[in-house]
Image (tube, rainbow, N blue to C red; front, side, top):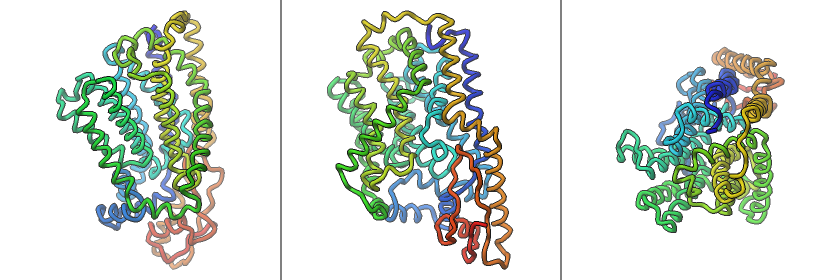
Length: 470
């Protein structure tokens, strides 16, 4: 047995593609809303560099993701482009997992196996994302956080390939340049990705020093680069301005307590996920029969069980703590999406570390019979299809909620266009009813001066008119 039996591989791959289809279809029904309008307006009317400079001093130092949000497809009047972004993000996530699996195991796994595992990890990520509506289907939130996710994983993959002396395009210079690009993108996407990247490089440099690993100079170069660009994000004056809106901030013990509690909450939910546990059983046989042949797996990634377990919880903790420290609350779960993405990768690394540590006991486990293997795969597929985000996505599509929401939002856009030159001083928009759970919805308020209402008015050049609920 490798990952699964060869005669089931193509069938399993096809099933995973089918599971992914609802997530792709939902993109056709997402619609610009809330911050999308305000950022698009700024992107249309102001020079990019001047706007980035303003945000650096008055809001945040996210030098890369700010470029993306200011170049929302709406800036180019492309609603179709907006709806394609979730598809692009999902495919880039798949690409990052594929490159990571390839970097770790291309010597021993077939192409079909690498693709199957990559697709399985992508589905697992989408299936249990804490907040998929903002993580995939809302442009402003998605590009800010998901871009950091896949850029960091691609960077880690390139580090592994560099360690193995396998370079992209057979050029170490090109390989390093692409690695630097991914590093800069990761740090400039959001503060959580910045902290994860910084933590990764510190850990790798410590391991390189203690274990006398090769590529020390390259790792140290990346660490210096990370410190430099992280300083831009961390010390941006705009961070203090944004924190000024929070009433309770910089309360260390409160932040620590709630961050630890939320870390325990989310990690327990993810670890007890039945699909993850089922996939972990399959992973045991993959590790035992194939992955153990590679240096990184055989040496447990140069980690002890206690250290690898610490890192598993640490990535979740540092994804939560900054929100409590700067705002006093957890806020939106967009940052938890980042934690879960890293958790998936570290979970399987932890399994390998523990399998190696307890190999005298776990190696005695008998391989699954063909019937048991098939039954396990069927159970994994059923849960990945009919629970959590997958079930919600299918429900939103089948019930018509997603289509109704899309029609409502299209009607809004049309009403706003028709009222550009009207003499009416008030534009009435219908309230969004029975909204889909998979898509991001932040409706306008009764107060026409609320920022979400004003966003519509400003973007459609009717700033002298009131936008209100009907």
